[in-house]
Length: 417
Image (cartoon, rainbow, N blue to C red; front, side, top):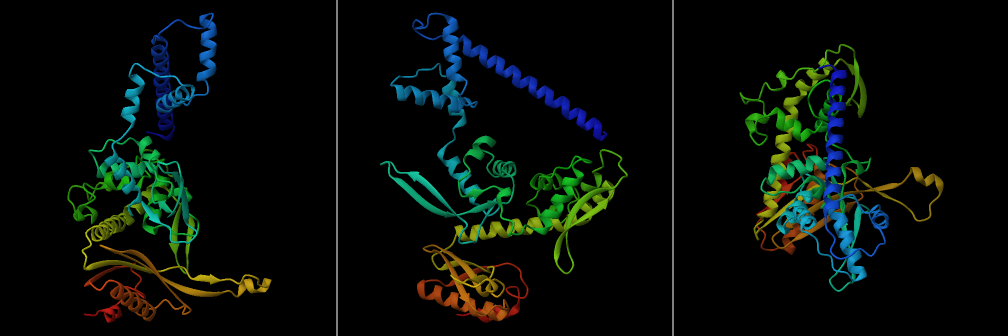
């Protein structure tokens, strides 16, 4: 199909959808008008009654569940009792979910696969509520930013919990206040190079192929089983050639613009020109590394979650990393001091255990993030944990893969009996 034919097909589908929605509205109005109201009407005529009802309903919410809630609230406020035919109540029950499903949605939003916790001291969200006694409560929670869209997160939830019937609208409604959307991520944080480059290629190819820019859906479409290492290493006989079978939907030989993250002396987002066929070949070239990266990332995250959940009384799970250096400011400083601010190294850690859940930070004036700094900071943390938790026999340490800091042989110096 050509690009023009695809656009015409989309227009036809939109018109059919509009007709279906209009038919539903007509049917809903017909059923509402057929509902009998007990007792004689206090209005002088049907026209007067219709005008009064229109004034009352014109500002009601569009959602049937919200309309029912507003009507019941007004009736309770005026001292009336509302008794319906059960139809609206049925809609309310169908929109509600069980408490266990609600808890699973909350846990899903807070999982590391769906969102990541912001490290900054200012990245906090104040959540206000009320107790049963009517007292106002205030709780401060560290903000978390989603790594995907709400639609992608909902699809991951339905895949993980197929027996839980939670619709997309309800799933979005249950999003906690401290879980921020993907487009709210601050500009001073980084995203994964593998994921971002693939997403940029898929965005460009969306107009020329049937590929979707949804990374989760794209991975599930390319491989048989995203949890199978053979599939993710492109060694499965069933799916290793799936991308080869993807063809362009239109024959376009003209060059199009697309963006990629490149690293030479520094990382930068560059604008490139290529034909859709060349972009598809580039996607095929980098896909094996991307699939293996996705598999490793998911397995590592799942393993860490299992270790934290199944932590024994004699074991502690520790996550460590260097934070961005803290800039030391004076309360009253001269203008030229802006260019000569001193800094301090922040070595952060978080410990999970059967009876502990604490964050640690070591502040140092040594600005060298080397293996010697890591060894010294780890010694301080191990000493603190051993003195506070004498029953601990094993500490499982998680960190990133920086070869000059954590992924090197000198860390064996921290081993102790």
